[in-house]
Length: 345
Image 1 (cartoon, rainbow, N blue to C red):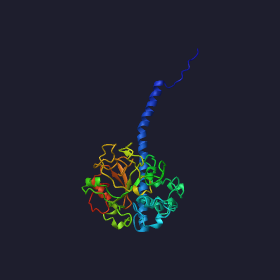
Image 2 (cartoon, helix red, strand yellow):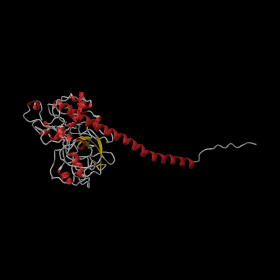
Image 3 (tube, one colour):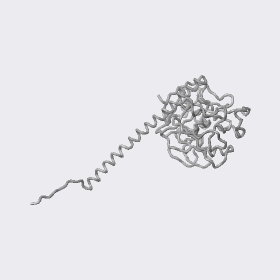
């Protein structure tokens, strides 16, 4: 009598159940993987700030002053003016590197730094590369500096074409410069000063701040009377030139151009504002919010819960979104004499 051969196999229902279980497990695992990746990116971002802080101290050791947020050559400086067709047009065409550009030699970027003539403005043919008109430098001068970019930040263009057309460069031309996610502090905007109980006026007393870019543009460590560990030197303003408002990439009226994204730009130094945070169509509307609202003047990051900073002593700390305007403003001033409880402790 012939025996029947029976082969065991999964039924369709069993297969669907297994697939569903695998899907659930992957769904549970994915957030943990993403969180681990973000933790690694955040650590790398903090290490960038640590390197920037240490390089600022090395700069001070070499020159006896901190890197200036900005400087301007006087109109009587014949060397700075020579061969520069834009020198007389605007003060911006008389400024050299900002703070991060000055730190290049202390971040193992000596070869790049040597390609710039720092006795001339950044907007000078010898310090520019094509497609800038009359440029005499090479294209690699505007290459990415990894230390100046936070790995948590989405890629974003850094096109200075709209700005340069305003000072006489040919319009309609893109000028792509290497961006940064970190900014030195200049002071506090009047709209935030009032939120901290101060007079309604702009200040220039942040760690690298100065309101005289011709004769008093440098700050020495001895002028940080509030204490180096109590004073923020750089913080994140990430995602430029994209415009980010409370975690969303937004479109706003054309008059709002989120420039100040190039690491060598003196104008990456900002005065943070007091913001309402209520209307993405009016991102700079006044109020008393200031952290992770919009990435124009204010601290902004792609980390959950706050932004990373480096203080005057070179220590890196995480500034939580819950920090009050009074404590934040006190941490920005170098000589305000404020007494506050350190939110990092």
